[in-house]
Image (cartoon, rainbow, N blue to C red; front, side):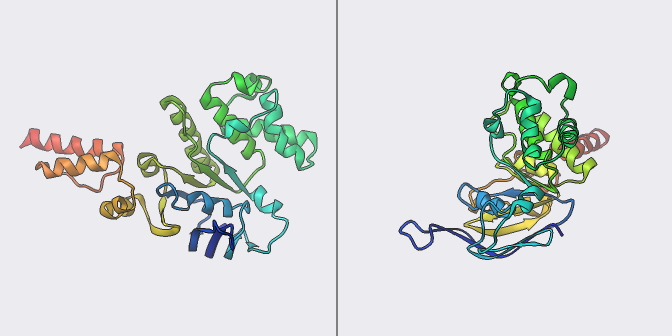
Length: 287
């Protein structure tokens, strides 16, 4: 089991006049090879939670276990954990700074003190993992690329560190539809073919519904719900009370049923809806 959180609480500015509890008494397990979706309204504790998974934040109380390394409030030297867990923040391309794509991706591996041949191999492999051609792009400035390409270069810089777990915080924020699909296609490939353990933080119910194996819903700093997309989105009333919603296609199916069409309401992806509606229409033609 790569990640486990045991009764984790994090309090910002503890003891001060602006003390605030961001997450409280969180228990969480992430299985090896799992594709996990993390959702919740702004201020629910998502960002605080994911920063505990690679030691950027340490628990005020409780313990985080990453591949058998224990992190608590007194832990020191968490460099090895940060190498195991790659965290891609929103707009990671804002952190690109080198003059070429190759140099930017090589920055992290070089800081590990790796031989140049290994650094070169990692850069080439990381670009391949995000679907960018090494020979065509390595000498280009990152700032000449499209938004989607810059985002993929930034993700490649994290992958070049060879993490076991990849955490993506709103990885398609600000991208156009084509850029979004490029990023999600590469993320799916990383999970399916490379068996990465992935945690996706997103406000898009549609993206979470079609991509992940399991969803965790955060509310008021705690885990409010967990389950498969079907299980979580079946609890639409609870989600709405938390300031969330179900995928638009689920709402559409609910409205169609209210208008007399015999369709299930536990549909949460466009592909599922197409199959169901095709069968309904074929049934009406043969009636």
